[in-house]
View 1 (cartoon, protein in one colour):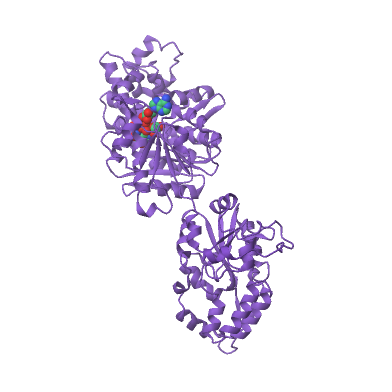
View 2: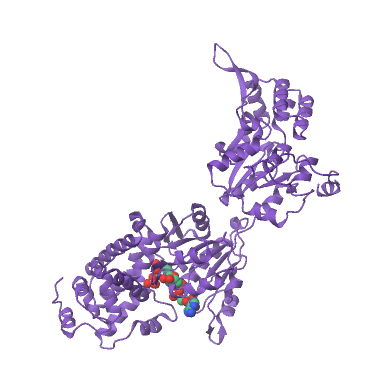
Length: 640
Ligand SMILES: NC(=O)C1=CN([C@@H]2O[C@H](COP(=O)(O)OP(=O)(O)OC[C@H]3O[C@@H](n4cnc5c(N)ncnc54)[C@H](O)[C@@H]3O)[C@@H](O)[C@H]2O)C=CC1
Ligand SMILES: O=C(CO)COP(=O)(O)O
């Protein structure tokens, strides 16, 4: 086919584009797409397909005519319309007159020619793949609904996305049943010249599609880019019939739908971070990307940015690439042979379409700054980092930072996700919070595993506030555990913590939804972290050291106990306290305030059980609380 097309020379002289709103792309045939064309195809928000001789192997009306024994005379009229030598209205009218069928004839025709036998090879797969990427697919046909609907259904396109003509029937006065074909409903845009651009303009009025592509074989499809408000790109299809005018004027001319499918980009995921959770998350992602079902949509390779360091005299990236294991942060867990560790941040994100941020929160700002100017605005970002930044003008969540600095949409994944347990395949759940539903759904495909359930919620800020603030409550839970107290006290502290989390989140961001606190990112993460996390572990050790008279700072304990992993709660406590202090809210959040006073060694850890009183004390910084206050607290003598 390609050889035949290549040998056809474009029509001599200028192309007829009378009244067109933009110049055609130049003399064709354009058998290879230009960069501009590829970009439009790959960024399409909606793709409109012609049916006859495009997604279907025949012209449906011609096939019906053949079935009715008037094939030749109707085919001649069809070709005149497709080549532009007869108006569409006139051709439709003439063809229907010649066919002159009854409803029973149509039923018999559909039975003799089931929709699946009429599909062009590759049509179903292409449409399925486009829909899987969140692209809206429409069928816009100059044919008739009666014949096109079964094709629409067979292709998985919702019937409401079909634009086509309707036959008019004479109705029997006695039975009320249709009996005889008497023309067509002229109110449908598709029954007229310029009907396809009009249908597209109507779609654009209803939906915010930035880029719309029309794919078809005929002159009426080409019109879609020649009139204002129509499509942005016209792909001529010559796999069934190659029409000279279409071949010459199409922005891109293909002879197989497979070529369009192959030109769709595959997503590529890059992970930024290589600690315990980053490694576990990359393992989940790599398992998904390596699966045969993902091959059409995703590149199997997942690059992981590693903050380079030496481990046993070797570079960590080299060790990971040799052993497929992060021997320092997640030893004994195979990450997947398709994970490639990379010490160069820009190299890691090159060609990526999905960026996963999972570095400890104190490093994110520096990382993001290095990425500015190297990230396409189409990139889909997600943050797994739990924490926030505090600037003089107020708090900034990590997703806000990413969105603002890089100009990309940023979702978050938060939940009860102790990294080591998930790495061993223990069932867990997570919340994916999105701003753009299509991005949330795409990210679900990236993360969801049989042992890792994900739920979508439309509250990014709420989910991220939950993930951030529960780290403070986990410190309180660790203090309680270190004091040797039982479940009642831990539950009391967790309940009070949840209450402060919710109030604080809503005070800062009134759009935060209460429901979010019942998702995995809310109460479930609070429970998991208060019973099993690193914040709890270090806080417990802090109390034990204090009780044993060997005071150790959080930094010392982090280094001693976590082997390079980072504690987020102590920093977050300082950051949140800064906001409370500036806004004069310290007494409204007594648990947060008391935890911070303990973290800063202004109060003993035992004051956690009297957090209301402890927060009400006047504790001036940097001077510590008075010896009297401390003594009273230690003895449990202070009342709220
Ligand atoms: N570990 C867990 O179970 C979970 C962690 N998270 C969150 O995920 C985020 C990342 O935590 P993990 O992956 O567990 O990391 P981690 O705490 O296990 O490891 C620390 C990471 O920081 C890197 N690092 C050290 N210095 C750095 C620097 N100057 N610049 C950049 N990176 C540097 C290290 O190379 C290492 O990859 C945190 O916000 C944490 O709260 C969320 C859910 C579960
Ligand atoms: O966020 C976590 C679990 O969901 C991990 O918490 P830690 O950092 O306290 O281990």
